[in-house]
Image (tube, rainbow, N blue to C red; front, side):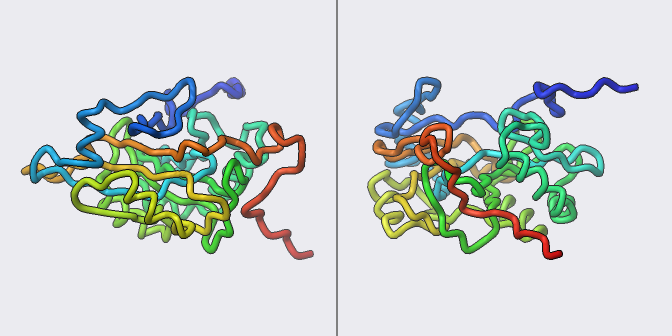
Amino acid sequence: MQPHPTPEFRPLGRKAYGSIPHLPGSRTGPADRHLSPALARVCTERARDSRDHVVVLEKLDGSCVAAARVGDSVLALGREGRLASRSPNDSRRMWAAWVAENVERFLAVLQPGERLVGEWLALAHGTRYALTHEPFVAFDLMRDGERLPWHAVIERVGAGGFVTPGRIHEGGPLGIEAVMERLQAGGFHGAVEPVEGAVWRVERREDTGTRVDFLAKYVRPDKVDGCLLPENTGQAAVWNWRPETPRP
């Protein structure tokens, strides 16, 4: 008999998603790190050369999750790489159930060994959303530690009909102030509170194609993480989305 997996079990043997460094002025926590000044300038001021390509996306405020294809199965994971179905967190278990209900869509996107990473917006963490779309927003398609370029992500996730973060800008560098000004109207996903920030994806065009060089993020300084979570408020959870109650 196979041993029953413990809550610490990580099917991929690794985290499902790592941390993204911050740009200057971004609100950080104790475990966060800043991008080097030289690379920050590539995001916001001056490209290194004509091969740099910058994509800026809205940063969403939910739970980072992943759906990983192992053979012909799709596993719902938390960011740390553990099975969401075994989480004590209601929202994570809800994610696992949602993946199970949409497994054919994930199989249409993923090759064995790949994982689709995104933001699970069912539970409000620090931002409420009046969602006009499903509660999962895909922002990366990965194999091990490698991520696909943004245009490839868009093309691939289209096969499953998944939502992606609103694109603020694409082309050369763009400064933080200009980015946040474009998000003042509530962003692309119905944020009720001010949008948390943005993510810069810096890609490099090469003879063999395009590769993702690095990512960076900016979080507005007055953002308070988890200010709506019941463990912080002592009150009931605030839900952006709940599954429909089955009809008798």
